[in-house]
Picture 1 (cartoon, rainbow, N blue to C red):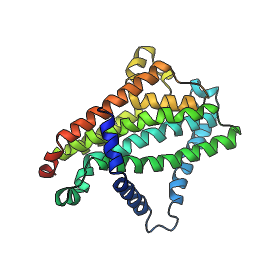
Picture 2 (tube, rainbow, N blue to C red):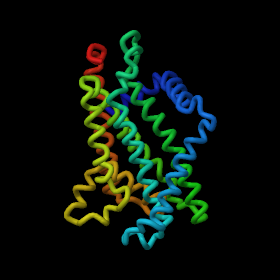
Picture 3 (spheres, rainbow, N blue to C red):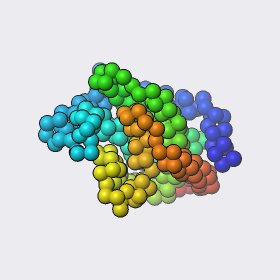
Picture 4 (cartoon, rainbow, N blue to C red):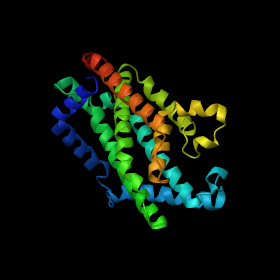
Amino acid sequence: MLVVTPLERAWHFRELIRAVVRRELTVRFRGSMLGWLWAIFGPLIMLTVYTVIFSSAVGVPASAASHGVFSYAQSIFAGLILFNLFSELAYRAPMLLHEHTTFIKKSIFPSETLAWTATIRAIVYAAISFGVLLVFQLLLTHRIPPTILLLPFVFVPFFLFLLGVTWFLMALGSFTRDVTHLMASIIPVLMFATPIFYSISDVPKHLQLVYKINIVGDYIQMMRDLLLFGRLPDPFLYIGCVLASLIVFAFSYRFFMRYKSVFVDVI
């Protein structure tokens, strides 16, 4: 029931969510000559840079050498797609209620929908990066693993996890702006504690369990398995991530709704 209720509320306000998302996507590149092409050029340039750097300047780690330079660049890019999706929301969520103070204070506005609009907006840009990655892989390998069809089973719980994180940080950020500064300090550190530029197998065995607690890193690992290596993720890892995501989703929504009436007075 705790999982179904926020989904029912989102469906009830689906037209509002759709309108807000459409407006935010339209405003993003307003005034630029290339418009939405920037959403493609950014990921394309990033992927190209990683390929050049790791093929000439830095080199490929031993654990990834067997897969080749291009595969390693793809692996990094795939990890960055998910981590940047998470970090964008973590940075923005604490200020979301402050950004929409006028609507919240002067109208009966369902503030919980802001998490949906922010998450969907971020996912649209991540989807563009994902499309660039698929094209790059198709050009290099001339094939895409059939396991890619299972990606929705990984992405949906990750989406719920992101919604939960956004609700929780929105609630905390309404009480104190220190949460914004805290995220600015934590996220860069978390980036290097997440297996983006390396894999879990590169981590010393006595530390691997600690790294696996990082759920974002777990989702990155499962995405790489399905998209790049054509293999199924560890079933216990998948079940653990799904359960953890549902808990975060349900707890954070309940936490947000519990203090929703207070936000009007503190933002």
